[in-house]
Amino acid sequence: MAKNRKERSGIVYSTDEQFEYTYDDNQENVETLAPELQKLKVVLDTKSRKGKQVTLIKGFVGTEEDLNQLGKLLKTKCGVGGSVKDGEIIIQGDFREKIIALLIAENYKATK
Image (cartoon, rainbow, N blue to C red; front, side, top):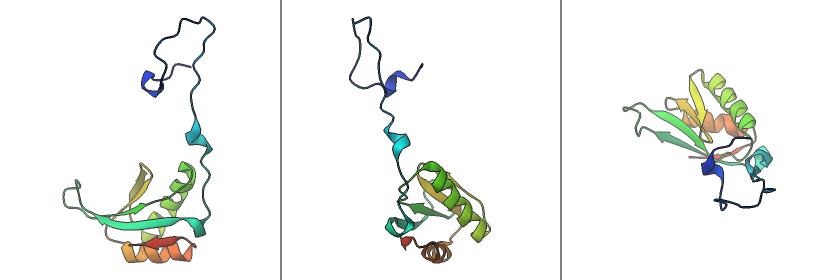
């Protein structure tokens, strides 16, 4: 049960010998919203990528596994590489129109 001290909040030291610190694990209880309730933003980005264009999909609410599934579907349909990092799907190249059409076909609400 050796977790990082930075994850602890509020307790610095306790003199109680029976004390055991409990961690808040609220991140695991996130449920994935239905596709109709998702509001995704599709953005073209070139910042800190040496001028290369990537398409970012932001605003997904749900588990990391479902986000990875959606990212894999989009990468497969576009025929390009990409990744899923920090709650965003990154697709290499400018595929905004195609991704919006694919997301709408999958019942997601997507905007530029």
